[in-house]
Structure formats: C-alpha cells, structure tokens
Image 1 (cartoon, helix red, strand yellow):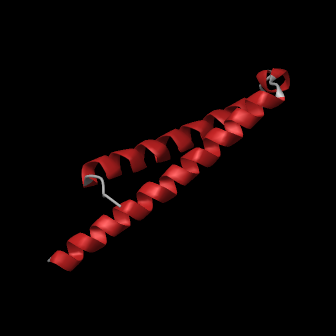
Image 2 (image 1 turned 45 degrees about the vertical axis):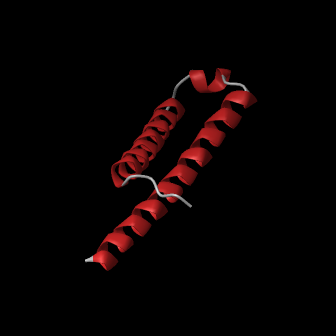
Length: 77
C-alpha cells in the first residue's frame, strides 16, 4: 500500500476530527429545544448517522496512517 505524505495525512485527520466535532455540536444544539428536530424526517437522521460513522472511520484510518508514518520515522533515526 502506498503511503500518503505526512502533511496530507495530518490534514485529513484534523479535517475529519473537526467535522465530527462540528456535527456533534450542531446535533447537540439542535436537540436542545429546537423545533427543527420535530420536523426532520427519518432520512435526515440516517444521513446524519452515516456522516458521523464515516467521519469516525476517517479519524481511525488517518490516525493509524499517522501512527505508522511516525513509527517509520522513529525507526529510521
């Protein structure tokens, strides 16, 4: 498997983590007394859940790549 550049891996990891925090904050704010929550359909919930799962998977994937790159750099020194 070809590895990505370290800067790209770190950027993607931070992007996934930031988006996940943003989605969580938005969901929390929406759930705290918003009438919008009552008007959402099941498809909105499914899309929200899917986006959350994909971002968690991205965090895991890019986190593992970052760890692997760091271990290779430490072994080379």
